[in-house]
Length: 247
Image (cartoon, rainbow, N blue to C red):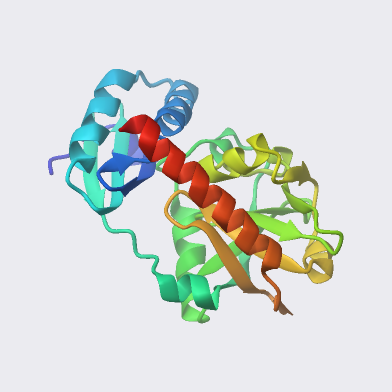
């Protein structure tokens, strides 16, 4: 792989998407490319959506389960294959998360773009790993819940309602997050760590994990996952329907 030095290399001014692949089909490719195009426009970059579509389609062909990563900067257009590292044991156990030491900046436009400016996420996820956790959850500058380093956070309240931090709290609008909101499986609210303490269940979402039960966040241990498993099944059905449409 050859990379040309540009604003993406020097300053992180580029965008990327990581797209889950199942049975040779990239899941929710249209939605990923729409987000990538918005992010590129926000950084002043031009993007050929048709080219990215074809690159993802070709890379996914013949792949049983994995991911395609698309990367775009001013002078670079890269496509990579990736493994999907999440297996059945992790879903059975549920993920453990800690609170990140850094704060998410809800006023920064980069917060809302899946850009190559990813240092905070990498460092906080690495620190979480050193503590025996698989994820770190950010608060924003106002102490509100925001997002994980590579995921969106959802809480299940005692009345069975499912909520996720509002976009205004400073977070990337994840593809799975948007699907759950679109289908009415969850709603947005401004949330605080106190809401974690009072929640009955919690889960994380991103394109590779889909819906992942959260076993622990900070000091709060979640013993229940009835509604989480229901959401997992509903998302699984959405993904199967998406594969049929693509195929």
